[in-house]
Length: 165
Image 1 (spheres, helix red, strand yellow):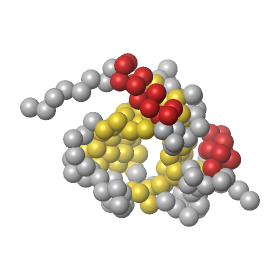
Image 2 (spheres, rainbow, N blue to C red; image 1 turned 135 degrees about the vertical axis):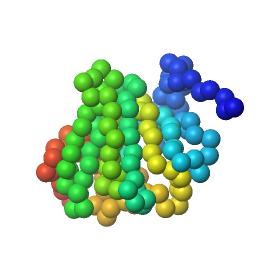
Image 3 (cartoon, helix red, strand yellow; image 1 turned 90 degrees about the vertical axis):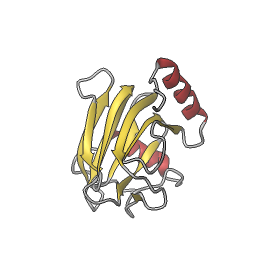
Image 4 (cartoon, rainbow, N blue to C red; image 1 turned 90 degrees about the horizontal axis):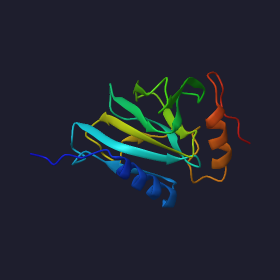
């Protein structure tokens, strides 16, 4: 029988500390035992100086879910041209605690508080070589304009498209 994993305040504090030291200013803590598992489960920890680059997933009929454990963050969904189609704020204080979305549509997450901790689950298996598809209009967090893009993501509203020059 597999060992139980407790999602404790200590584990969350440890992951927040790791995210603050990580060059990407975010980290994951896997709960699944293998990338071949049919459901991938993990903690996704972000600071307010990081974001998950807008992406979609290559699997057909795929889904992905987020449940907030600490902090506040924004889940954005985009159309094929990069316009925001949906914006949802998840907060550990409510009123919205989670979302499950069709992850074949481009989406991103960005922390609105100093740090945010999500329980994330998605359809497996996971193959890092072809899991994510990054649209041409999305900005890599390593890009020189990433901080401008981060600030736009934090306030982007449905119908808006980021116009970086």
